[in-house]
Length: 112
Image 1: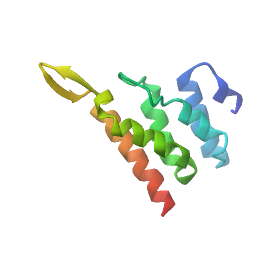
Image 2: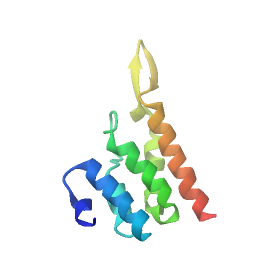
Image 3: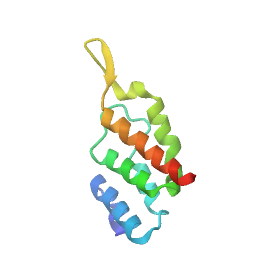
């Protein structure tokens, strides 16, 4: 399972990390794999594995604390999450914004 977390495929890495965490409960090797899937310099629509990695990171809870600053930075830069349509800026992917927000809420819930 750990070898799959080093796979060249984003989906494989994401699901292997989630499976490893669910089986072992050990977040140490999992959090960096999931964190690597979200690029704070992202300027377009996320790859399909990115929202899944964010969701899984939220499931890990408090050990995923390292992701909080990166997720907040992406949410704070909403101009990166928008595109002009007929002169009006709209969110490019409201579902992704919701996924980021929910992951932050789940991580924060574990801290309390």
